[in-house]
Length: 62
Image (tube, rainbow, N blue to C red; front, side):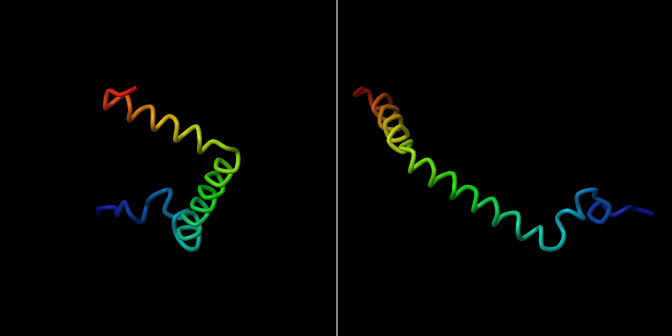
């Protein structure tokens, strides 16, 4: 007999039920929280400065 790998997976019980839908929502909430913290902490200016410098180097201006 062939074993169905989908039903015999060790992680199958973790991904069944509510956890399968709750995990992505939790990850999105954490991501939004970290983005908001970075914006509030002033890191957005550092990211924009690095992006501007990178673009200038590629074009050959800076």
